[in-house]
Image (cartoon, rainbow, N blue to C red; front, side):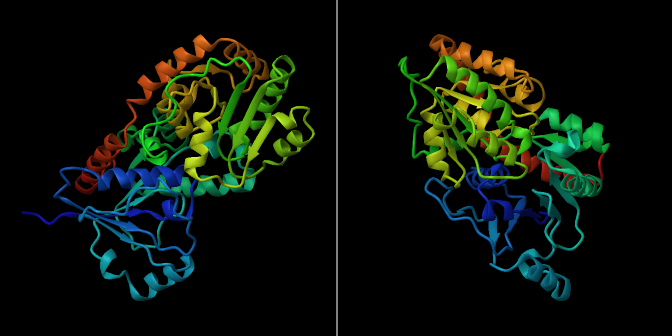
Length: 387
């Protein structure tokens, strides 16, 4: 019997952040940990050398139980960890690895190994204004290096897979599309989601938007559309949930001087996941009009919870939502406003979207993502370079 494949997965994003990439890594590992039967041909080491740690929250996955997965997470600064690995070599837990899977744009300082990489999106190539010229150039250089050195690349949508081929020249056969799951929301909320039916109340219309404050999330156009809606529906309210990111000053300045300011709840403090999802559950609509997306985790979270979705036509958002959301041109404030007004006045249309959303979300499960990663690692380990 051959020895199990030893794989290192970069787990640092799950330890130091609560953002989308971090959540996807955390939930993938939780699904791998729950697999039954456990794979007998693999051993997984979670590389977690980092000093910075996000606080553990209610609803986070339970500590690892599967014997085939081990977490290595000493609290050391990244530069010190790099120096130790260069000078002394990898410790026993990281020795004799067969494959390294990078999950973000900063690879672990491990010896040269065959690699698999997850590339979540290429927004910095689609429009450099989304990140600023300097940051976009840095991300492009890193992404090209990752794509060149990886045996296989995982990505969460076919839209991003097409961009990997078109913008980075990655061979189609080297790309594996592995969508994220949606079923983590029930564990985070402590059981079955509390939302079972849309409220028929006519004295409120509550919109929620989740996502880091950054240009591609399109908060500024959403604000302009909401201002127009509020003139017709004074009882409308908009909750914006997301940490401050970059180049968010135009939106924040516009919000402060907006006539709609008192109708907007802005949560940039970094709400716990449970609190953020509870606010989403209370909403009559998720407004997620991103200009560019690699997947859009809030989309499947809302659909899983039975919250109707208004999102962007084209790209990954349309792929993820299919016919389970109202889709508009995200660059058109007119279309955003008209869709908001139509959905605000039509509870039956919102209920239909909610039902379609639940059915659509059922196709996004973390167990499926976990099983797909097992096959990805086996294929990369035995297959050499890209076919």
